[in-house]
Image 1: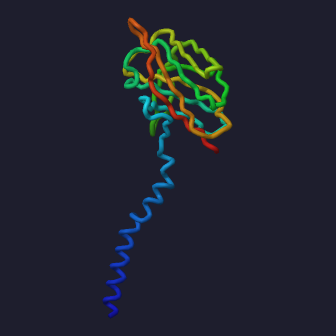
Image 2: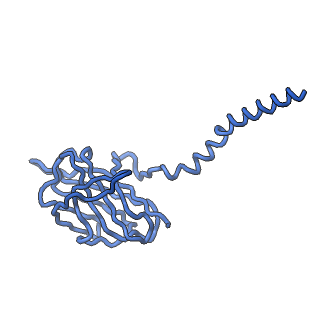
Image 3: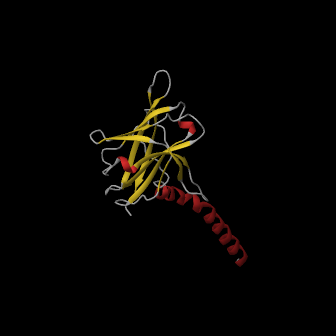
Length: 189
């Protein structure tokens, strides 16, 4: 009798251990799902997610944001770049704090940084919340990574902010094209 009780306990313990992950996985996936979620406002308009890097995501903090244009996102050369800032992104943009450069995307052992500044004129339209960058020479459709760099103070309100980019292609007939969007996150702390 003692022997059958031990087998029964081992079997029930084994069943419990095997079933426990299946029973708890729906609860765990709901708890951690917001960290891996990318939010899109409109999925039907050809949304294209672009890569970015920010040094400090906390609200009300000084921040340096790199908005990248990788080679796969530039099918043609670009005469200018327009960036539409969200209306609820309350921060002060100044031309002297916005630059355009050839960049290196950092990783585990390297830092994200500008390799070469590209001389550019920067215009800011505060009414439409649009930043336009005019490089002195057109941005080529090469294998290099380019970035628009903002040195700003993050808004006081935490949340997700979606920036959209458009570019005027170089060629016989310049055409304005949608390049993609960045969804920036500003954290509470």
